[in-house]
Length: 221
Image (cartoon, rainbow, N blue to C red; front, side, top):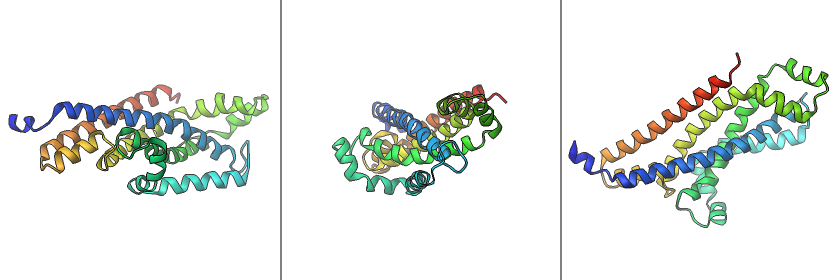
């Protein structure tokens, strides 16, 4: 066992873990912002909603459906020219961010829309009858009422993003996926790959625990 432990370059594992945390944190933050905006627009421009607009709704829905349907590994390849233009390279943690965000934001947007649709229409109608503006309805009714579902959806999205970072790592984006592939698979060190996998699992469990805590904390039922 000691010999196996010596095959793991712990300093590189720690660096890879930091890169995975960095990619996950930044992409989750931006995905949350974009996803909420897109989800709100999908809901508000839908039939019978506050900003009903079929044309806008169709365009946003098409964008969301297209990008959430593209397999992530293919999306990375498709976005190579855009990533090079934006970041200047296809290597490193920053290079993975455009694909991570574009791949996850539409997915989360649908979760946001579903969460908003589950809100009792009577609550919205009551707010309207009391003279609440659209802004007040959005920030004081829609978002607070759907918050547990939004957090739960973000937790699922964050876990998906961790797996996306692992895939991005295989093509040089860094992180634990890159560490597992380069130091483990390519050098025929299964134990190193196992250690990297365990590190990813620990991160996933931590995200799930945090997500469950805040979901339960905000759930008023």
